Length: 191
Ligand code: GDP
Image: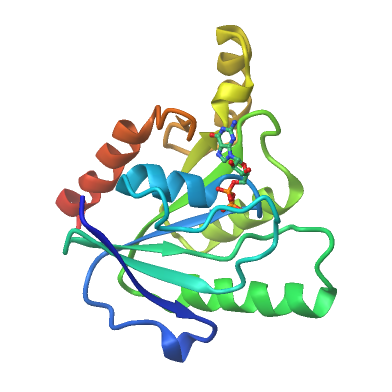
């Protein structure tokens, strides 16, 4: 799938025209959001992965095969970020999620080992309140060594989701990418 970076936006005025259905990626910083984007597009360096959490403070837009925009929203919940900056991030994320009529689907990404954390639950409730469609992705499943640990991790995450299944994923071998793509292509038929 062809993927091109479009723009990094620090403010809503910098968001590109709403020309294509958008898929937004949300998660705590360091959860593995960039690695997931790179796997889905088959481009190792599309989104910059980093061992330093809290780096991305911008909304990054990518054009995917002339069919979708992928929208990488800034990671939240990193403890060492000052409150004033947290406020700015929250505002930027909320402005995007509230205003964007081309937004078709949100992926809420969780660490399969950790499950739901406070900020994830807040975001989930916020999405439900505002009627935004979301699907949960449980990433880093490779870190759960046994099959039964993996099943338990996914089941714990699943127990808190409304109607859709949580999708397991690992960036180590991109396992789970196909099912995520199926969920993405499905939105075309639902719109
Ligand atoms: P982001 O801050 O959410 O964009 O997270 P990154 O994609 O930059 O990943 C943060 C760290 O977790 C990096 O060191 C990645 O190599 C690692 N990581 C991401 N996804 C996985 C995964 O599925 N399995 C494992 N073992 N490590 C991962």
